[in-house]
Image 1 (cartoon, one colour):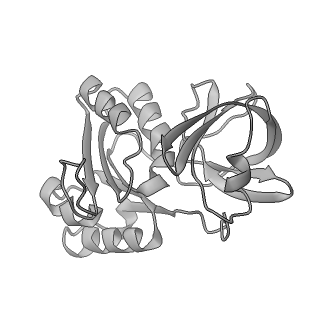
Image 2: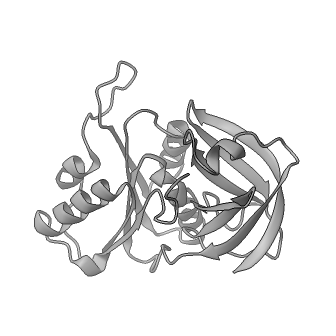
Image 3: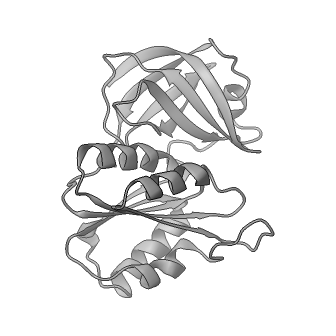
Amino acid sequence: SKKCESPLMDAINLSPTTKEFRFHCKEDFEFQPGQFVMLSIDGNSRAFSIASAPHEKNLEFIIKRHEGGAVTPKLYELKTGNSLEFLGPYGVFTVKDKSKDLVFLAGGTGIAPFRGMVRNTLRTNKNARITLIYGFSMNCIEEDEWAKLSKQYKNFKLHICCSIKKKDWNGPVCNVNEILDKILVFSRDKRFYICGPDIMIKVCKEDLMKKLKFKESQIFTEPWPHPTNKNN
């Protein structure tokens, strides 16, 4: 890992409580999709997944504001051009074998690492078969972007569900684990990557193994928020 300092290029509202932060990526900073960095501000550091792919010129992060947190409220005050220090990359939550059928299960802002993983895999392996199953409660992050990708790539399947009934949502109303048996059939070639709250990871993993008979060796997980982020 290495220490870098990078200026904020842009901060884009994704929802009332979530922003995408774009920093300039120095050419010598190398990472694998799915890894995270420690962002430091005023002496406090927190882990955030990199939401961009290595071929992109920016380092992007999808960050939810936590009121009273040590880092996220200060991040939200950053102005374009302000520099931030980060350490990294860290983590082993990366695609192990692109020749397998990849199934990404995301909850809330746990969608962040999958942005880079999906974009990079589609770009580097034209034959990869990818399924993204994304569950949210309040705000669907970048629904249009995901829909555009699924139209552009026939090998990318998208399923989005909302855990609560909302006026502006016409898709499935359920938790992620509740639609797994509707869209998945058993295959030794499938590899699952799950990122989201602890409880979501637990129930998804249990259902994959008990109901659908996948093996634990086919499943990789990353809790979100990251365990190091006790107080965001």
